[in-house]
Image (cartoon, rainbow, N blue to C red):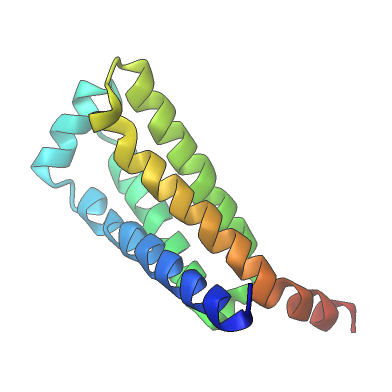
Length: 130
């Protein structure tokens, strides 16, 4: 695949992932609809602001080129978070209409990470070794 296509896929998936992460502001603000969903899953309310903060920080880290050193950790944080969210939704007997969105976000995180590796990882590794 040529670099132009990889860059397009990278930015499309990364911007989508960034928007999902920035939507964590709704968790921080404890929007009532999200509080009800959290309670239906059996999760305590005090998790919401923490999860929101983690998503917002992860989104900023992934979107900011100056934070490239921390981006791999942010990707893995998103991946673990959405694996957990998908599992929780499946475990509470939700069908694909419940966990399909988290699976889509998980796929976007995987694609964004893979294309990030293609575009930046070799440059980053050579800068560290110098």
